[in-house]
Image (cartoon, rainbow, N blue to C red; front, side, top):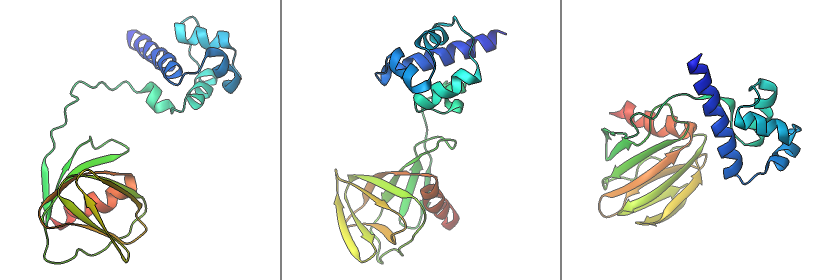
Amino acid sequence: MAELNNIERLVRTRLRTLRRTLGISLEELAGITHLSASTISRVETGKRTISLDVLIPLASALHVDLDTLLDTRTDDDVVIRPLPNTSGTSTTWRLNRPTSNTIAIKMRLEPAAEEPEQQVHPGHDWFFVTQGRVRLSLGDRIIIVESGEAAEFATMTPHSMAALDSAAELIMIFDRDGRRAHVHRESAEA
């Protein structure tokens, strides 16, 4: 019973905090959800039980899914200790937990004698160059991305990346499709 009370308290806090962070008043949220402002206030303060008929419209209006609202996992260890994975001329370090929806990695590219083969896959890629210069090949285009610059592109365009002149380091963010294409390919080649 105590665990259920803790979950309810956590959900109430999340609802109130999300509403306030988004700058939505009780009256505005009531208009979006078709619930009364009084009902929402009572849910947030614990004077009304939380039920799905109230929770679903509130979650939707606050742009959060039920799994996120009800997630009770703790962040006991928030530090991630990435391990290097080397394949060919690149080394990657995974910067997030395996269960994350978005994938973040640090990558070190060494200069290569040959241009890497261009790949395509569903998804979207983003990277930020922290050191060096990267030659991004997008189909027939060659784009030089300097240290301190970022690139973002749809990955159905044939693409490849290579260090230019000397080693380059970058931070990359992928959606799930990009993760399958980049992280799994690198692991398979190792």
